[in-house]
Image (cartoon, rainbow, N blue to C red; front, side):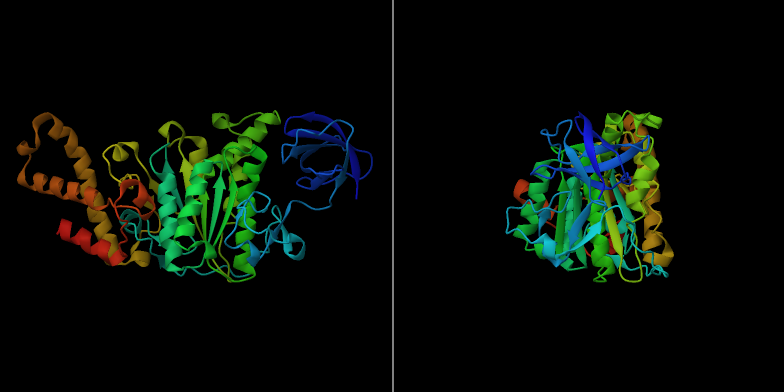
Length: 435
């Protein structure tokens, strides 16, 4: 093992100088003190110096301390002992429950790509029912697909992903993984309590790198969660439901690290490696012969600007996009889905059938007509419209209200019982309105 000496400490950045063999990028180093503080090699300079990230933000590190290279990257324990637990970015338990012995478990490097299967899973077009009308109708969940929930602050992204996790976990469809990336501690606690009260923790793994933690940990927690999901997909041949909240915070964490490293920003002020940062995690959320990973990701939209470069970058990796609108939320409609901006490449006759597909086209036409008539009605009033326009306008209003429903995870807050609708019930409800 090669050894080095700390030459400088600048907050999260630690410069380590080596006299002999240099470590590799993404290799893990340990400071030779009692705490064995981990350092992650970010880049190499002049064949002698390694610029590292102080993962635990240890403030006790000093110039002159000895450092030892481990010869491998960040390795996390994987196995059944982690199911039902709440873990940090390095898969250490943070739920206060009985600790597990990670020394006896298999370990995997979070940066090492899994072996590529010779035969990728064929498109089964198997639809996963969520019980949420707006989602099952406009953006059907297909096994192995990637779905994004996009919206600004306070429009209900986390509530919606909690409801999805609650509903899908209740059906017992595969295993659920939750990666909390840079979100509020309160929201993580609420999710944990909700799943615990519903006896759904037994089939769930939860990893958190929350808002109070340094950007290095927020950057790594997503990769740790994906590595763990890959293990259960490949070794135990399970179908995985992977929830990530929030993918924008993942980019933001990389951006903070990039700023600390004095890298020249790219478009929109983001890190120059934004494309590879997003692809690194998105490409691993894939399906193989052994099992599938269906991912549901929330994406925060800064200043409600859907054209933000980071939002666009993540959106290009998705099969379906659920857009939550502040204007809809202000009307008291939950979930606050923008029915026109929400779209899915999976909404096709081959996947959902002719009946569902034709109904979606009819609903879209009615909602578009509703939006165009709103401006006219504001000027001349609804009574001045033709009979056909009045009928279509009334149908569209009913549809907008129809796609609103009460959430199970909000029962304690609004004292309204949660609702679950099968896809057949949703289609029948739409037909009753538009026919």
